[in-house]
Image (cartoon, rainbow, N blue to C red):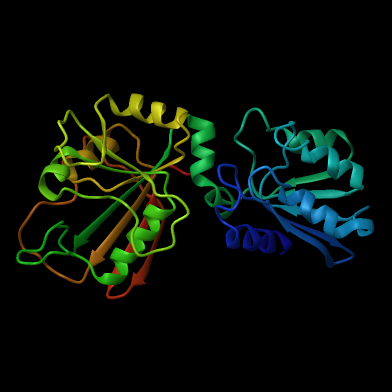
Length: 312
């Protein structure tokens, strides 16, 4: 399907439009792809416009496949819906709705203009811009809790510096490099004095490095101390442009975030080890918390479990 191709285009260009979402688009006429596009760097053309420009004279009557509902407002660029109607597109298939109240309603605008419209709502499409979607819809960052554990759920291994292998540790640095902020709790600050920066991987911008808790921070610490209630701190971070937060704290902080309903995604790196002793990665939860979209993949000798608590 051409929506699959649009998702592929957006996936390959992930983050290129930051702080805006990345959208992929494909124009099909007579069963043939006549135009493709993906959102350009911030302030540039949206994916739909790139695809329409590529399609040119083949656009009238064609079908436009787009990973997210075309925008209906004037931001850095004019509304995409106006360009779609002007180009003579006959049908639009969108992979998800736009959660931004200021820009949403594009599909309805197109329907009113006489176009055939289909919403093929896909988790894969929403996932591509999950941080931006949560930031827009809930006015807080999308929170990913990352933890390294043994098979028996311990976060330390007696006599070892690391729980997981080199591949997993490198992937954590890649996660930091694509997050707006990384955070731990004061217990981790006191025990490990973590730097929380992204190292030995390509980095467009280093994340903000945070510590949640009452403090005080050690004199040499370069972390930002966030003392307030978690919902208030996340709202403040969102207002400062933080769309994604990677939580790397110990069990106390993780349990607090989970109890407050503030963890969206879980990443558990599982090492092929039985520690036999040591702290577990979570404390007591008041209620069970179901997970969705569970997947497991190998990372070196480890396994990475990924799951969602809240869908984007």
